[in-house]
Image 1 (cartoon, rainbow, N blue to C red):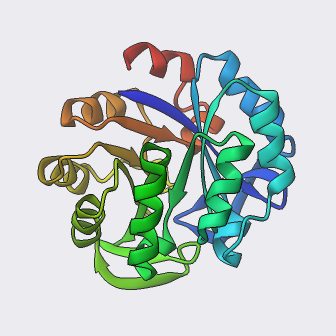
Image 2: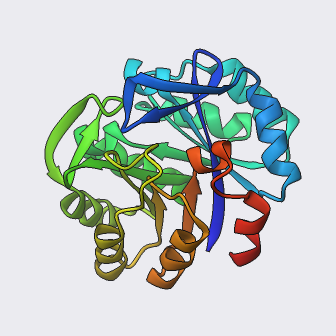
Length: 236
């Protein structure tokens, strides 16, 4: 199981939200590049990067920070947040982003998502963020009528290579992941599942590994010291 540290960008800073609420943010660093380098030095190979401003606005906003991380680290960056046009996907890949995460567009523009998946294949991840089992969109501000299981099956059917599942109500809470839904996704899908949201202990990581997820994304727990990245990487 791959351990993936997360950086959420808002206003050019590294922040963490509580349950996806933009009004409940904690700023952990004003230097995203330095933070990325910190995780690299501790042994991380991949970085989960989210442009929170972009997710809310519908277009990438924290360009300077994103470029800085891509150009000044060896990390394989996966980026999500406001990516809703194919030309933006292409620009990000040319910039050096290794994986582009599609969220809102996967719910609202199925045919465009299919085209992007067909063209870019393994460079695309579908991010499924859900509250009470229903998928959220537009930076977690809207709740769709589509369930996690419905969307994940649809995405697998049209060519998604992997999904990232986040339980929004647990994200940033330091409680625990939604093991039940994560386990069911692993069971019903033939593509890899990456878990995110609520991971706050090494024991959580061990349990996720037993469920068979491909990766685990850790955010607040790294910044508060609840999980040591080097220790987490040692069990992966």
